[in-house]
Length: 362
Ligand code: CS2
Ligand code: MN
Image (cartoon, rainbow, N blue to C red; front, side):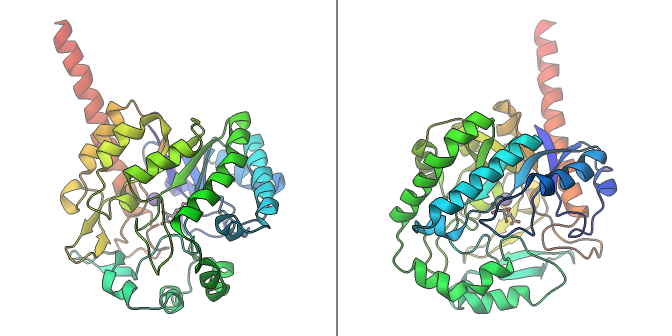
C-alpha cells in the first residue's frame, strides 16, 4: 500500500506541500490540471510544471485524479472521436511524465452529489451531507446554486463549464438509458485501454457517488455486479478500479471487504473513508474510525492487507475540524488523522503477521 494525498495545486489549495510532508507515510500527491476543461488536451508543458513543484517537495506524481471524460463521450455523440483522441494524447503526455494511474469517472452530468457541504456533527465539526428527500424534491440547477453559494473554493465535479450547460445536458440525457451508457463506456474503453497497455498506465474508474440514479440520470458503476460487468467490458489489467469505500458504501447492500477480495488485482487506487447511513436514506461523512460510521474500516484495511495490496491509497474526504477553512472534504487535519488511522491498522496487521510467523517457527 502506498499512501497518497490529494492536492489541488499551488494556486488552488490552501495546504502547502510542506505541510503534507509532515504527515507520516505520504509518498505521493494526487493531482490534476483542474483549470483545463473536460475534453481538452493536457500539454506536456503544463504537466511538467506540476511535476516540478510536486517532485521538488519530495513526492511522486504517480496518480492523477481525474482526467474528466467529456459529456459527448458519455452521450455517444458523433463528436466523441475528437474528444477521445484528445484523451489519448493526454494519456501519452501523462505517461511521458511518469504517471502510473489515471482515475476518472463515467457519471452523467454530475460527479458526486451532496445537499450540504458543512453539516454540523455532534462534536461541532462539519462534514458533507446527503439528504435523500431534498435531492428528490429539488431541481438540479437549484441544488447547484445552493451548493455553490460559497464562492471561496472551486469544487471538482462542479466546474462552471459543466453547470453553464445544465439544462442542455439534462435534455440530452432524456433519451439515454443505462444500457446506452454501458455501450458508450465500452466504446471509450475499446479505444483507450489498448493504449493504456502500451503506455503502462493503469486506468481506474471511480464509482458513482452516491451509487444510485439521481435526478433521473442513469448511473452504472454502483455495485458488485455492475463492477464485474465493467471489468469484463475489456478484460485487461489496465482496465481497473478506484475502489471508493465511501461512494459505494452509501448503499448498505454493498459489501466493501468482499469487493476488495473479489476485484483484488484490478484495484489500482483505494479511496478509504467512512460515513454514517440513516434509515431514511440520508448519509453524512464521518471520521475514518470504524466506531464513528457505518463502514467497518478495520475490515476494509484488513481485506487490502490480505490481498497483498500494493496500489495507491488515499484517505478520500475528511471532516472540517479545528476551525480549518477549506474546500469541502479536503481539509488537512481530518485527512491526516484518517491517514494515521489507516496506517495504524495496516502496521498492526503487519506486526501480527510477523509475530505469528515467529511463533510458528519457535
Ligand atoms: C471525489 C470525486 O472529491 C470527490 O468527491 O471523490 O470528485 C472523484 O474525484 C471523482 O469522481 C473521480 O473521477
Ligand atoms: Mn472517492
